[in-house]
Image (cartoon, rainbow, N blue to C red; front, side, top):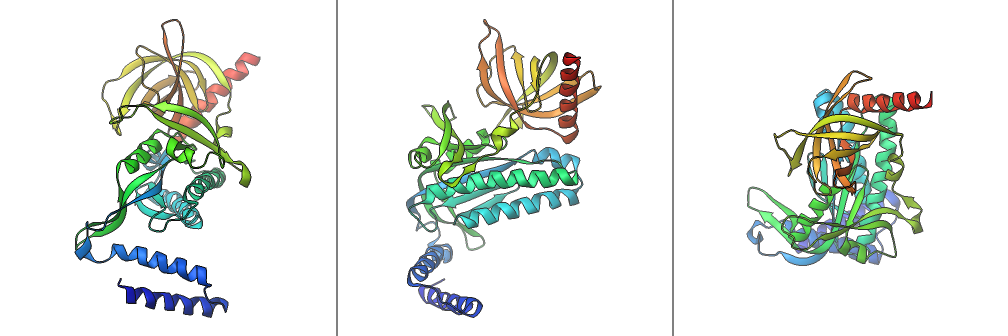
Length: 363
């Protein structure tokens, strides 16, 4: 798209808006649209591919659906589309509402940018507000899923702000406008660490918005390729807007003391290692468990569990969890975990198992 094309598109937009609303774009609105069109101009001419990357501060948001893999394995393909598509449509609408740019869809994941192609002074605030509204909307979607008997889905979100290279990658056959750099990789890793319904933000993002948001933390995490720990914070809400992440309500459930043997496999970079290690569950709730292990695992390590629930005569398989904390216990390795994904039947049976033991204790 050349400059003359930008002018023609701008004139067409004037005509469409005037025909539909009876009004034309104001001066500031016209300047904003023209800036956007000129920014998008960098996507087009293949002759310039790879030559016009610019360094720019951008806030990157990664969002990924938890439990999607288990849902695909347990639902007909038609149901998967019925569940997934409305979710992605709603998330896209929220991103556009806050003037974000969708960089790409990656299956059940979304990468969005705030600050590219158009920079605004409140990029960070809009990205965080967008993330909170996405989680609020996921909560409402899950209520609709429950009413229809569909499995619930949860979203983990990671946000980072930093200098990246912005431009067009590819060839004459295929090219796309995108951002690259270490800050993008960090945003992706933060999302991978987020639990279901959680929004995690980096220290650099927090420094630009600490008077705007309510957070927990900081939590120091060691990541591959980083010589020093990375500080993360959990976004709880935005007081000035009356927005709160509904996730904290999901943590509440009955807890029961048990002594259940289980097996687990370590997951790294999405790969489930074949070695099955033994452990014992000492405390079980709807959404997590206290584990006694033979060796210590890193915080936020992901594992796949298999366990037998004797009272309900059920073998729970494909239960995924993340290690959240360590519980000092006189040399014994005890670690708190939260379930990140499990089949609907396993979820139901775990809740039933907990409820039966709660009632047994009270009788």
